[in-house]
Amino acid sequence: MGTTVLLILIVAVIAGVIAYRVRLALRGRIRSLSSENKARYAQSWSAIQARFLEEPAAAVQEADQLAFSILRDRGARVSDGWRPVEMQRAQQLARAGQDHPASTDLRNAMLQYEIIVDDAVGESMRKSLDAHRQRVAS
Image (cartoon, rainbow, N blue to C red; front, top):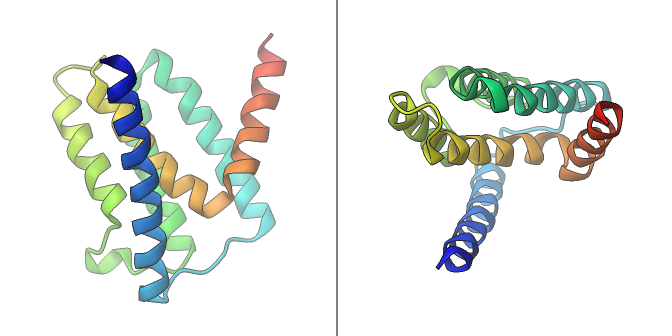
């Protein structure tokens, strides 16, 4: 049963990434970040992920702020109330997980924010920084 749930989650995340990119392309308002901003956001995300282990609710709030900053820097019109579906889902999950800080809702919210971060900085950059952080920690 656990494998089935994991498979469903993976398929949902992949479908979300595809839908997110299609919507962004159709909106035509999203631009790429500079290499410096990509590195800065990837480092921030890595720190937020590390904080999640100790303070999940606070890390989710920081992830929301980071996603908002990324979208704003990429030129999305977040001031008019528009939010990508992943951000809307993450915010819903975060609200649901407020009463239970160790809940899967908060973990799933982080996965939704990770989609936004990966789209902006590139999964390879984020993963290389994560690997570096893990080497330093050991």
